[in-house]
Length: 447
Image 1 (cartoon, rainbow, N blue to C red):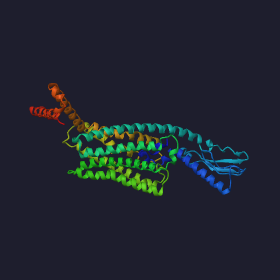
Image 2: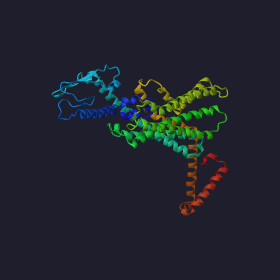
Image 3: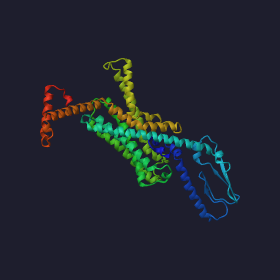
Image 4: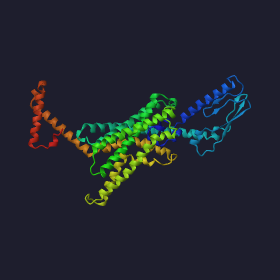
């Protein structure tokens, strides 16, 4: 599955893996170059299908130039085999041009290039990549549904409108856009299980890749803003939240716009090949990769600083409690902050790129796709403030429904009359006011 190569942040941090995972594209590219090279040689030497000797050919593995009868041609093993079999002793493969045509390769690709091991590994990798794709598809779908529900809740209840929840809502939107961009990219580039995507180079395709990178980068910057906001809240005594919120908006959505726009312009002028899903030019790729890695590391520093502050606060005599309860609260706070800050991305951020490639994919793509779901559950559905507001609305609905049903029971003629709707609402309003004055809890009727 070549589509796995650059589906998520794994593509941002694991660039050399793209070569191994786009093996079908590499073979297609080599085939096109081979056929073009053979055509040039034929034109230069005036050869055609009826010319004596052996015509140039692509044998689905490597390229063989035209040769005269009795000539032996030597070629090296394709570079792709070295990626899959770095410990294999690669040798030269030869073919003889005979009167009957090309001879069989000697030594065979199995022996010279480890082709048998390559076929076995690519077969296992196809199954592995399909499994990872299924995992992250479920993860992003679950996150998208959960985040959408959380957004509706936070937007619906006015009492939940505050700077902290506004930042959460922007983070939720970034997770939603990231999931949507992954699905769009898979649909555009890899809808068919073949190598047609290797030669896609349309404006629409490139626009999809720009949108995908923008969504991923903005997601990481909103994770960074969550850490920055909480750290500033703990450090500063007087914190003008509303004034800083506008700067958060500029950083969260503006900085990724600049980075991705610069990358797109550079890519257009210096590396306008394919659908921009391969990033062979490392220098250009750092325009996006650098800010992402930087935000991850700054968030890690902020995370450590917040943990230190929490330890100091929990150990304060004013907090009370024994040592075990202090560490329990600290552990719970730490676990809550890890998905919000995206600290788990530091695990592989600076590890050698040829180490634990499969584990990285499962970690970055598989588990990372569920991050939006975890954040929505922790910071919306399990939030005490959100739960209290939902319960208050539920109680209000039940009380209003009770009075409506009671009123219909006592005054059936009025309830069935359409022209007295305004009178009914007035009576219901007065009844609610009288009940409040008589001593019912105010939050039972809160709307």
